Length: 119
Figure (tube, rainbow, N blue to C red):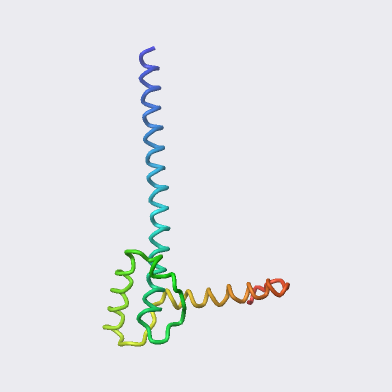
């Protein structure tokens, strides 16, 4: 009987370890998503604040960026040092394309037409 109790205790311990590691992985996933959101907002904020003619407007970006703003600002400074002023970071450029597509779809929906796959 002792072996059965020991095996059950080991199995229970292994199950708890697995649950803890799954919880940690889930927390890492949440942290990764949160960081992606913050760094994207940070790149948008740099675009709005540092580029003479920004390709996006996002008044909440810097507030949403939090501490990631300094990372995005540093990337922008490197871009200027390497390529000269007037260049846009790639994230805001991609966001502009996505924003345009979303605007088209929302306009179609508000007009009562079904969005077309080509925009």
